Image 1 (cartoon, helix red, strand yellow):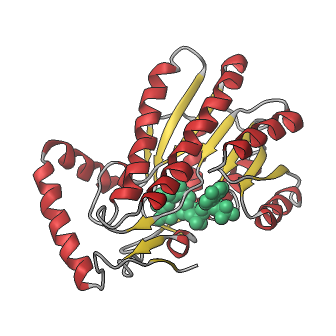
Image 2 (tube, rainbow, N blue to C red):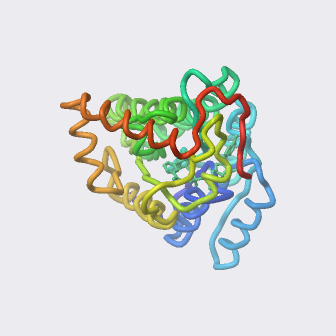
Image 3 (cartoon, rainbow, N blue to C red):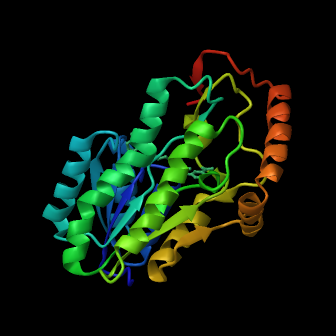
Length: 277
Ligand SMILES: NC(=O)c1ccc[n+]([C@@H]2O[C@H](COP(=O)([O-])OP(=O)(O)OC[C@H]3O[C@@H](n4cnc5c(N)ncnc54)[C@H](OP(=O)(O)O)[C@@H]3O)[C@@H](O)[C@H]2O)c1
């Protein structure tokens, strides 16, 4: 798909990967709709885009609220009359064991990280089908393919993003509309500050981190040349393959990871939810 002149809706555009994606799309001539809760941040991104000759619309939207999602679609159609690309990116992290994850946290994770994408996709598909073109980008994660201790609740929402994308690609065949799942690994954004944790105060990023701009470039490429899945870290392909054929290896790695995290200060059973932001 050609981005020039197209209308791209990005959720979670006030920071990190969403912000970088919106700016990257605008640089390639797309008209972008920026959605998130922090409207001041969205206005800053919109100003940065219009300041360089681009076109942007900022819409305050809590993606956990169905009414906000409907309003986002309505405002986009009112301003631009079409939707070519939807980037379902808004989300937050959570670290804690399954045993310790309260119902309300799991519900919010599902609402924000998965149900929002599901609902927005359902809302824009009739529009894209009518246009006979469109692209849905679902930002999942490497933990949308393989899960580890302390990541089960968050990871489940990212597995759901991959499952939805896989089903969609079949359901959309012949419609001119397609979908891609993007699987970022650890990325330098506000994600780890905004992340909630329970009993796991060592839930900081480990290992090398990629930039939000790198993920954004990969998202743009996936729109230009639609692929089923974007994996930004090549060795993860091997990990996913091994996980599929030898799940026992993942169990062994999971046990080592769990012990290391406990040594690093994680205390399963500690009942306070914390966030660094
Ligand atoms: N960073 C990583 O290491 C990493 C790795 C794999 C996958 N991911 C995924 O990448 C996506 C983007 O994360 P990021 O790294 O860019 O994190 P980030 O810098 O914390 O940005 C998260 C974005 O989501 C928005 N958001 C959160 N809750 C929302 C809600 N209820 N309604 C609307 N917007 C909401 C935030 O905006 P407001 O707070 O203004 O609403 C913000 O714009 C997430 O889905 C995340 O799971 C991140």
